[in-house]
Image (cartoon, rainbow, N blue to C red; front, side):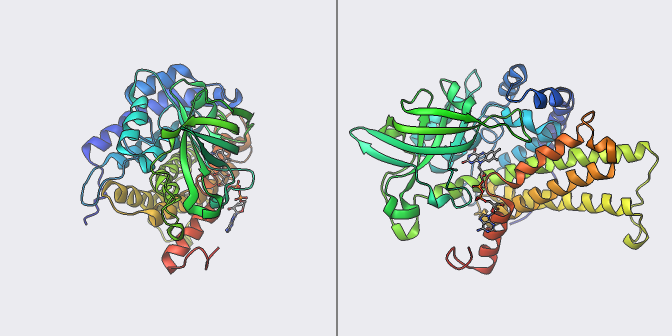
Length: 409
Ligand SMILES: Cc1cc2nc3c(=O)[nH]c(=O)nc-3n(C[C@H](O)[C@H](O)[C@H](O)COP(=O)(O)OP(=O)(O)OC[C@H]3O[C@@H](n4cnc5c(N)ncnc54)[C@H](O)[C@@H]3O)c2cc1C
């Protein structure tokens, strides 16, 4: 299949429009919403909802095509995400939209469930979708989650604790919002028993127990949730309640299918933040009269020229890896390996670039007068959520070497 690295006119148009929006609407409020953690710019959120119904991770993208079908919806979303996160990562993460919750519905729901839950995001008012997998004893090892769901009459009853749920507060305050909660219906079945459930605003027995105070992406809310005999309708299980084949861990595959679609979007977030830091450094150097001599041999370059060109090369490499992962989604190809490679690279690159830029600008870089120190704080999360950098490398190594989980842990 052909790969074309030229963005289409339509995608370029989107890129130009979103860049202008990010520059004019997000940059000016970035510091304010970093200082006032968890406050949300509702005027901007409403405006973005108006022109991007369904949100960043869905609506326009997040859809896996059938093999042979072609689209550029995911590429357009990745380009949009990079521009918006170039503007401001914290505010961007607080935007309404399908989010991880919607992505889980797309990956695991029946056609009727997709119709029922995803259309909520395209209404007149902003709606948030969140997803809760992580527990105090289950982070990277998602398969060891302990939250249970058992059937009682025509309801499911959930018990357990979830932590670090992005947009959990926004999703549950909103009457149309929901959290997709992963719980086991058969602890003895291992991965095959783990299923996704839609838990909606106001479900009895569910409570927000903590709101995190974070280093970066401070505008976005991250919460802990407790479920004590939390009752939800029986039809709120996503997909089938059958524990099909214990050896093939069918139930759990939905988690991975969700991440295949969302990890490239996290990589795009990382690339946006990294580009913001690098653009700022390059502009400052240019203002100081420092010229980067592209094209000369690296051994004749000054230290700063070498640092800048290396950072640019790494950022481009991350973007190209990511566009491959996204192109595979758009053409209906399985992209688990490529999505993990892109996220591993982008998470590492944004962490290194943002720290290096702070270092190279010395006291100005460390000052809160400019946004570089904030980009350094906002960068790190990309190397943590939706699977840490180490876990992405583990998945990559397993895929490349053809080893199963039992052989490479
Ligand atoms: C701001 C924020 C938002 C989040 N949002 C969500 C959300 O919306 N929904 C959700 O479910 N979760 C969310 N998370 C949780 C996130 O996905 C987990 O924190 C992450 O998966 C790591 O899990 P852990 O924190 O338990 O770390 P651990 O799994 O305990 O890992 C600790 C360290 O050990 C390393 N490590 C672990 N296992 C291995 C291994 N086999 N090989 C090599 N190294 C390894 C890890 O890379 C890490 O460096 C969020 C987290 C944060 C901080």
